[in-house]
Length: 476
Image 1 (spheres, rainbow, N blue to C red):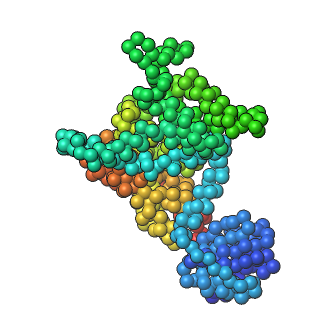
Image 2 (image 1 turned 45 degrees about the vertical axis):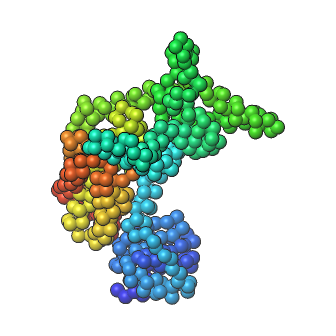
């Protein structure tokens, strides 16, 4: 077919000249806006000669012809419609755009109150991640230096100045979390930060006042206050609660007194709630989380490692992984039960390795050109730890390769447990994950990741490639 024939065919299948509002080309696509999207014959376009794929939009369709060809088809199409041909820059690869669309569609199917709440939780911690990553690396590396040098630098000001940065982040993290939590839930941020300070063990805290014969005792328990019991979860919960208390107080407060008494009453009420209810509740939840993690890692051993690795990406695909963000932060806290070593994260990072292995199997075995292109473009960034394009553009739409990738990733999870891999911070994955594991275990981490590649590859090669399904999704 000639370019004019491609253009005529698409024009007929989108409802004709009168239905087209605009025609624009980018590097790979003819992007069309139409008056009535119901007139578009999506299946016929997908199966048309020369079409590599389509992306459906609410107000039109994007037809993928590929670099070079799309420009010729676009000019022919513009001549037929009489509408000047526009152009748009495409900064992202075609695979990223398709992954974005599939991700949006998938999450729309699984969007509910839980997902929305977890998005809020993620928004609280995401701004803190650069500091958490840097502080975690400082703590991890300084611990190695202390052991290797027998504390040779403990009296050097420059060394302790750097260590103070790591100490400062995790010591005062409850304040930052409370601040962001109140802000995210539409409260006054500083009030959340103040209430977050209730979770910091500072000797000068008035609640910790004590002498040889007296100490401040709490009602009900009759014991002294322990600010660290509720930990980060107490600060998170109180930051959210502060926002709601502030709005409730503000609703009934006369305008004349709002500036003075709304924040005052908010803090007084929040202080009582924090000390008497939320701190003890935070302690229960924190201990529960550590118990579950310890059970999965210690009691279940390699079985737990397999289950965690194999089951992680289904959680990611519907957005529930955001609930793990505060857990990772707690596990990387040097003052926590794990002394800052996160044994969960390396296990979960293996999930991306299974996807990479599945991607290689699909690329080598399929005959579908469109899938080969998407897989080729997704694999390099997948290897480096950015797995969303590979998952949302390749394995998840096909179904079966997504399952085999997850099951294969479990092999890496097993080795993560066997090698006792731990991360000193977070923020990267894939092969870059070797940068954040405990120094001296980088080789073991790479071996585990390669095992996840192999597991995903083998299972997908033998059980995950269905050419009829591939042609159905990506066109023949």
